[in-house]
Length: 312
Image (cartoon, rainbow, N blue to C red):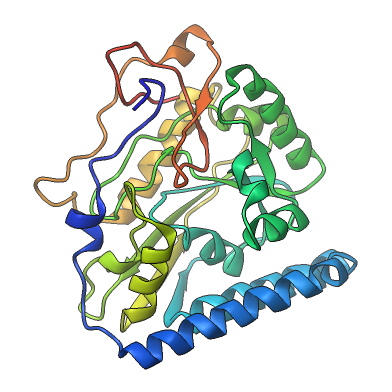
């Protein structure tokens, strides 16, 4: 793996393999069929939804994402209030591709995604129609333009969601919040909205089925989720960090990470360490490079050749 990219110790075998009770195969097939029907309906109706006023459009997005998660057998529990309208940078810990519909079910927003998503069947078209902001993962020098795009979106009153850990973690451990995207909040002078996401079993423990980590294929993840029983997605909206409270992106990222970590509760389980902090190339105002994995939805920073993980 390139030394530019953040990594996590999570893997499908050690994390996604921690499963609870399972639904029957026929039920799982029905869940996948229902999810596919919803995605098809969304593609067909996306153009019409885009013509709706913002309030009604957001209501449709919330309803569709809630229905998608419910079709897969996942119930949503929300803590906290979404608050008013206006531009804000939404940042959250990253566990799964499910994080995207989970956030949108509560806070409709524009997502930051790798440019490869444009070419994905179905999802790529949905992402484009939803106003997704794309980042060129193989072009380090494209990062400033991406930050400018995020800043412009925030200035026009849009909410933008990023996952600043740079990689998915299973929920039993956490990564460092990379700093790049926080510059856009400083430039636009908008609040930062931290979120804590979790997928839980009936006993309150982490639902390993939801974790989308390492080299986990999307098809395997879909089937694992469809076979899961009693999974609950929990989203906690934490107090917003107002503009001006922190003068630089380092402190702003640290404050957001601390808020999410506090909401996570107990420390990670032994054997699954937090991502350690390391000297960052952004201390030298260098460009940052987005992560290469399908799970990496935000950019990271270049590191020294000997480092595999660096905060941005």
